[in-house]
Length: 86
Image (cartoon, rainbow, N blue to C red):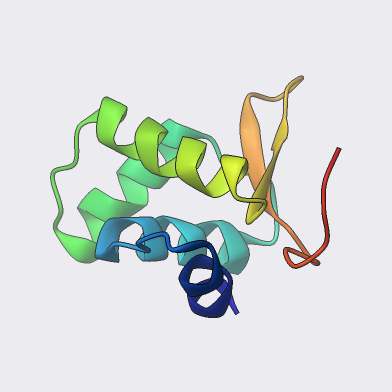
């Protein structure tokens, strides 16, 4: 679904963006950027820098694929990315 949404908008869902989205969806709980960094390091062996993960999260947020929970400074997957968000 994320691939289709990005293709319709002419956007690129890079491997890192896709992986960050997968991690947010698989967690079933709000995840912060540093939680994601930890998983990328432990499970994937990636050494991504915090700004890289924040940019991926910003992209996903701007395109309606995740929601930010400001009080937790964390992110959750969007159940309906095809609908417009306010």
